Length: 372
Image (tube, rainbow, N blue to C red):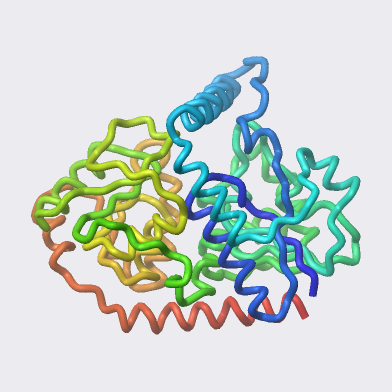
């Protein structure tokens, strides 16, 4: 079956690229012909245009646009090695269709010819304030006879703003099969559209061996920290874990980073990032995919929840940790005794593997049924 995948494949974000790789690789192994639809809306590639400021929300959206543009400039000036590593991974590991679509209108005018479209995973249903709801990520294009499937699509949070609810509900109703990445997504889909959804794992769980992909780093003994946002809490936890092991702290360079360097910064692509997790003594993260790959690669870890206005994003990893019996690996305190407890406490990886295998089987069943 010819399958077009619509997801966040272009972002220089480790989880975004690896989940796209995992879904495409799994579908290919299942006998299909999958490829990535090259959708490149401006709000994703360069932040898009600023809007006339009529409200605080407009001001926040404009600040985000300007920050993205500044980050792109910063990456161009000092992040060339990282950018090239991401591009090389995409060229080597992803099959991306031509042409590139810059707008939804262009995608609707000349949609890729497929038997099925799949949207997901990642936070494709979390509308950014600078752009609002994008119907492309609900597969609102193409031949009406084409199957439309959401696989592990994420709202990224447990609630949706009132202004987006009606439009999202209408778009959800146009899908033939829906699965979500967080348990809370089941209730959201039902509430917004009346449709039923299945809770499945992130596409990265569909693959059980990443050794052919990862690149082992030259460093041999270190703690790896991967943070998408920072706080005094996670900064202190990182230091304490590295101190407990008596080894260096390594962290990937990020051009969107708003905080100063902690430990030694490395310019990594997806393969090298995987290698760092696989090689690390311990991982400290506040990222969904940082948490998940620690689990997939059997690395002891601490997940530090986000605080303040971003705390609703913790839903991304909270439901996953609960499903895998690992909810005690999140740490919302920097007390030395609590950090030391998780450093010393072993993880029952056999029990985790059994839960992963069961969840993976449910995902495979969903995809087989949805594509039949």
